[in-house]
Image (cartoon, rainbow, N blue to C red; front, side):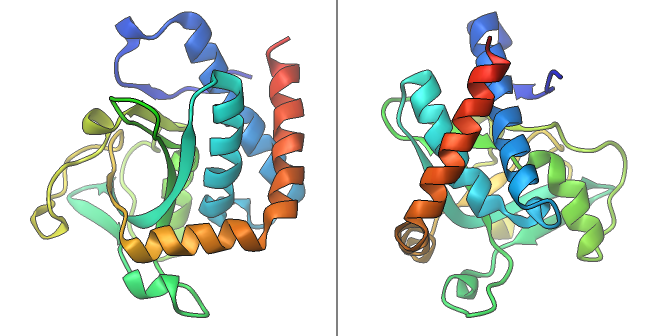
Amino acid sequence: MAYSELEACPSETSPLTLRMRSAIALSVRNCLCHWFPHNFHSLCHAFAVVGSNVASIALDRNYRPVAGLAAIDAGNDQIIVMADEQAFSHPLGGAYHCWIESDDAAPVELVDFTFEHNHVYAEANGYPWTGEASPAYLWGPSDVVSIRTPLASLRAGFGKDKIWVSEPQAGARWMQAHIANNTNAYVQLTSDALARYQELMV
């Protein structure tokens, strides 16, 4: 099974790299779908942690999971905003998002393996969704695939192949604590996803 994606600079990305990215995305998805079949759509934090681990190992680069605020285009002049900073300290959570960024060299890459779930999130939370679904995953230079503007100035129509994100300090602290509290589980999940990745690359 091949995964489609938004590739920001296809002329600068080799076919092998595209194949590896697709295999990483699919292996992480299949892993989390296997272990959490009923709610994997809502596990953006797990996609970010496991995905950053697998990408770091497979591509020999440093990727990190990020927890923060986000907004996506739902079509028909509608924006879905996940920007509740209180979510990181509230016991019941709230509207936030997790994604992946490279942190070893410029340009920074932004990766979101849950991008295909955008319309599912919209429908589950009562937001209208118009037109096609988002790409299976997002992977490209951050300054190309993310919107660089203050949230207050964000306007609909930027497209379903881009995302607005921001990482507050509260999100960084939350992610650090989350990984520390679930280290053993993430070691096992990463091992499972890596095995699936290796099978796909044979």
